[in-house]
Length: 354
Image 1 (cartoon, rainbow, N blue to C red):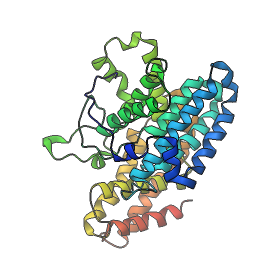
Image 2: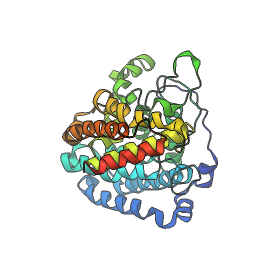
Image 3: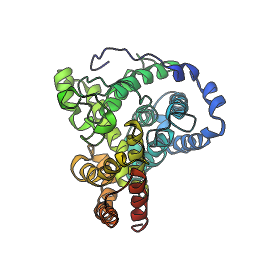
C-alpha cells in the first residue's frame, strides 16, 4: 500500500455473498445486460491495442470479470438489488463513467492516447471506486474511509479474478491512487462534532488535485519512481471522469445534482416531507451547486480538460439561470414547507431550461 494505512476493512456480507462472476450472474440476471454490452463494445474499441501486449484478451477478460462482480456488489449494497438505496452512488454511476464518459475520452483522444493497461485501470476504477459507502469516518492523509475500504476490497477482487500483485503491481498501484484521489474532503468538522460525510459533499473538491502534495508528505521520493508518476497521472484522469457530470447534457447534469441531493438527505436522515429538509435542499441545489461548479471543480488532467471542458462551459450559463430561477420560484410562495416542495420547484425550473 502506497500510503501505509492500517488495513482494517474486512470483507462484508455482500463480498462474501458475491465472490465470483457466477454468483454475480445468478443474483443479477438480466440486470447485467447493459454492462455486458458496454464491455463488449469497449473490447472492440480497444482492438488496435490488443497486439501491444501478450495475453491482452486474458487481461481484458479478467478486467471485465472484476467489473461485473463490482457492479453487482454495488447494486446489492446500494442499488437496484438493495434495501439501502443510494440515489447517486449505485451501479448506474459505474455505467456513467465506464460506458459514457470513457467513451467521450476515446472519441476525443482515440484509444492510442493511453496504453491497454491504462484503459484497464480506468475501467476498473469506474467499477470499484465506490464499492463501499457506509464506513465510519476515519481521517488518514486526506483519504476517506469509504475509499480506503474500496481500495482494500478492490485488491481482494483483483486477487480473485486472476491478477497478480507481482506481475500486475502497476495496476494495483494505480488503482490505489485513483480511488484514493476520488475522495471528497474527508476532514472532520471543527470542534469534534459527529462527522457525516454527506454534509461535506461540497465542502472541498476531489483529493486528486492535492494528491501530489499528499505523496510528498507520506511517500517522499515518489517523484523518482516512474511507476508512481504514471499512476498519479492516471489518478488525475480518473478524478476528471468521476466529476464529469458537470459536462453532461444539462438535463442529465441537473438530474445528477438532484440524485446527489436525495442521497445526502437520506444519509443525513432528514425526511423530505418535513420542514427540516427545506433549507438544506434549497441550499444544496443553489449555493451548493454553484460553489461546486464554479469554485471547487477543476479538471485535473489535460485529457480530461480537452474531453469535457467545453461541455462544462456550455452548462455554466444555464446553471446560473437554474439557481436564480429556483430561488425566484420558491420566493413566489414564501418560505418552502419541505424538501419535497423544493425538489418539485427544482424539476419545474429545469424543465423550463431544456
